Image (cartoon, rainbow, N blue to C red; front, side, top):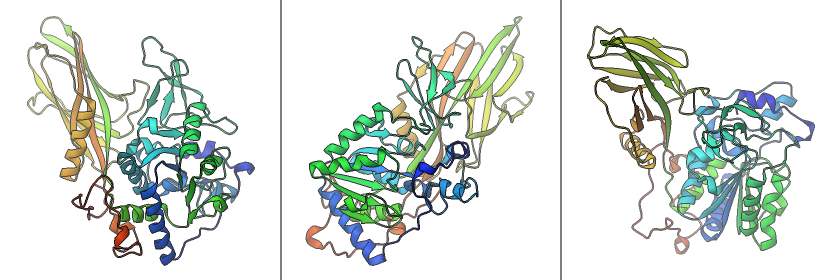
Length: 466
């Protein structure tokens, strides 16, 4: 939970019951329920996930109603709970990534989220298969043309207010607005309509980490009942909808979902965080022998946007000992120099990352020759990102970087670099409290979705941060 958002979204008397005691099913009961949920998912035809703050507590983001939740502590006069890392550096939980894999296999049809942390999008859920009922702290929307912009920094406002940035469409240019709802704001039709439609179509609505107290969102899962659908609730506290559910599981969401994925024999993919940086070099000739140039390292999202994952930039010239190095500690990172026009050089740009990144730095080398006219190019972004993810996965570390596009103009050149800054693996055997020999029985053994007996084996690597 962002400190700023938690402070703005202060405790109100109408938020429902807070500070509920957590309930844990006994181990044997929990295991039986996990197996039952696995079979329900296996047999489902239209599975919808309905998620709340409880799926993000493992990411270091406090919930609202738990014993250490935002509203619980505020009611007790204890203030806003501390987050374990910057909001913009939170990484998806095991549950987030499990939902991604279930969507990829075609079992999960739609996700409805009450969270504003953007972790479903970061994890890889397609935007068209996600309804963010309460908005997204990292998203801006153009009220004129409807364009949506996903940021790597937390947008400054809530309540659908104007932000400092404008729509990048040259035919539009309207001021953008944040997308996070404030108290009393109606749920956006664009998000509500598909959520309601999928709940009506669902044969299973899986409610994960939500107290199901905030209306009208909490009533969406009930719409599946009219068509004969089932509601399954996984939450540590009782909810007002428990009596309507076919199955209620009191346990940690990650532990339950890990057990389910274990029985389904579905491997959870690693999460690789990729961030972007925009490097711009403007230059102008001074007489015939010298050139003035300005290097600027900034956000991909424009000059008025922060570059949240970079702490500082060190600029050096490894092939030119006559050129002085520079340490840039303040954003925007800018370096101004005047050099001989006919002498090419290479800049080494060392990006020092903030503590929320798993690697401390990476270095980009930039060749500069003011007499050679290079060509612009744009690479396939999806291919670049796939290569970076594969490289990070194979090398079990981050810091890899690739150029996504480079633009060469008569008096400037710029490039967008994609950089891997985090990687996390998820190990089912460490999280799930279930055994290979289960009560499901050999006749009901669940194979990996889309595979036969020769499907890939589940990863046995321990969950780690790199």
